[in-house]
Amino acid sequence: AKGVAPADRRALEVEVSQLLERTRTTMVYPGWTASSALDTDQNAPIDGAIYALADSRALGVAVAVVRGGRFPERVAHAMLQEVNRGVSEVETDQRLCEARAGELSRSCRDVFRGIMATYSDPAKVDKVTELHRKVDQVKDIMHDNVRNILETQISLETLQAKSDTMSASAHQFLKQSTGLRRQVELRNIRVKVVATTCAVALGAYFLMPLFN
Image 1 (cartoon, rainbow, N blue to C red):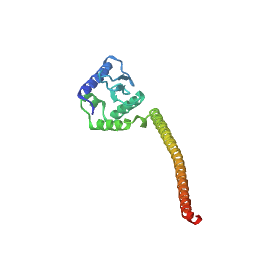
Image 2 (tube, rainbow, N blue to C red; image 1 turned 135 degrees about the horizontal axis):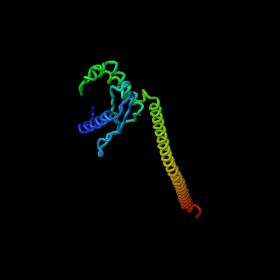
Image 3 (cartoon, helix red, strand yellow; image 1 turned 135 degrees about the vertical axis):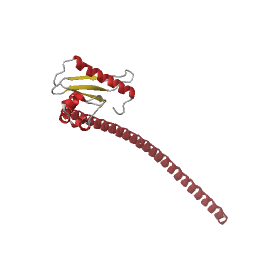
Image 4 (cartoon, rainbow, N blue to C red; image 1 turned 120 degrees about the vertical axis):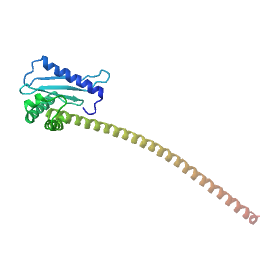
């Protein structure tokens, strides 16, 4: 159990022992199954479950502990069937009966590694799980699309607000420029009037002696 804290590992061992203890008091028949949810610590429960399956002759029980994630019970039982089938192909009944706790032959180790690699992704071996995953992927894509639309809408509203502000500023600038142009035109007219008046006055001043 890699990645499991020592306290959690001990709790898992207790859970597995309790489940196997049921085989002593229960009529175990070929294909017998059992399962229980993991709740090793009320303060920090381990998300997962324990599954058990008797082999086709009820000579042994395979147990799997699944932590976290979506792992349907039917997939767990299919995995345990593969375990029972694989072990029966590489080990004899005598060797299994003589095996001691904690011992695992190289052949069984190879079987377990292959099965764990195959069932590490339930969607690869279970069509329903694969369908659920595809539905979740579509939901994620839809959520992303909705978020992008909302962000685009906000961007458009911001752009529209900026455009309105720029239009108002341009209109105000146009009004100011029109007023300024009028003021310049009036000033030019006044300058022309003053210049013309001065020119007439000077002309009259120089012409007055001629009339006298």
